[in-house]
Image 1 (cartoon, rainbow, N blue to C red):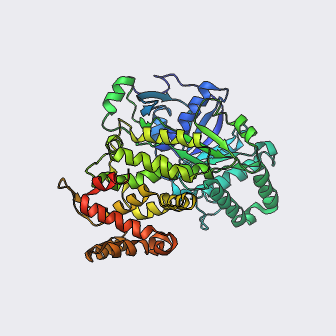
Image 2 (image 1 turned 135 degrees about the vertical axis):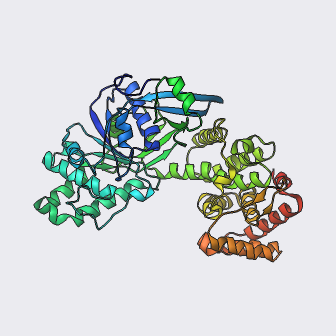
Image 3 (image 1 turned 60 degrees about the vertical axis):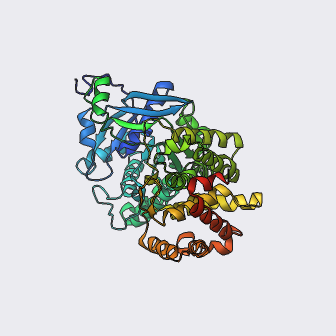
Length: 490
């Protein structure tokens, strides 16, 4: 079997237009795969310089394979199983700024650089007041980026055409807004270092750099340990950087306030390449759609499925009762609370169900149930309130899901003998233990709904009828079991 590098495999050459902070599985299976497709299907013709955002990372591994690797996409598309391999060749080189700081800073001097893309984890977009401008490099990602931007500003003497389009992919809402604020904080912190350039640099960044908020969506399990020998045999290369991901992908990019949608689409022609990349006025409705129609059903299907004796998400979808329950929650309840066109919501919901039905991933429902109450508060409770406001009644499926979570937290043993082992913050676990010890479902319902440390309000008072319906469903589950209780609402 051949080693994988530029001598044993073809590698395209294109101008370096993109700086990518992060070399992990997600960026390689999502962003770099998207750029590869843009190069193949449009005149984008760009390569990526990868920058390792922390001291320890994978750039040596990447460079050891001349930045070549395969993406293995798996899942269901248009009802059919897909399992495909693509060799990605868009990364030109990978740098460690902690040992190659001069080379890192010199990227700013390259005239064709236009984009900065990052995924430095949720903790990566943060302002650290201990960073100094003279650090080589600054420890935080926004600090490194500010150093790079100032170098570019100096090199090109504030040329308006040399500003950068910055698209963070960290999994926080309004990531671009947070990153922009951090950069302004560094500009203020280092104003004495900038001297007479301070106002000019700040103005150049404000007017000619374009920071976008984005939403990314693709499940990336990462390195396929179980199947790696089989994959290497299939591709005929000893690729040690294979990354596995689901077939579904979505990237919503909110246009920056100082650039039009048309210009951003022209510069970053992902939609033209037929990719599921949406350049939109606002990321917010798409964020709500994902949280509501993907995470929302996950949160309630898990305890309902588990207490019905089902362990895998895919099996829950195909179950004659629980499958109907999932679709009821998805289509009849949560979908009715959103403000996007119904055809668009139905397509997204169908995509979500295809993702749940991935034949290559055994997604354990118990893996979703960690911290179920805080998840319900952010993912499902808003839907409960909007549904009640719009329809004049409570959504039975979502309330049944809440009753299932409360029952799951009782612990004990499932009908098939499996031990029920809930996991959450100690104070929540203790509260449920004490409430269930009373043996009174009215007190259990009232106690859980009154927990302002979970809900930030007393739901007994703020959501009319919720206490009575939760108690009714708790009693049903106790008397008939989870599956029979679900049947009563279908």
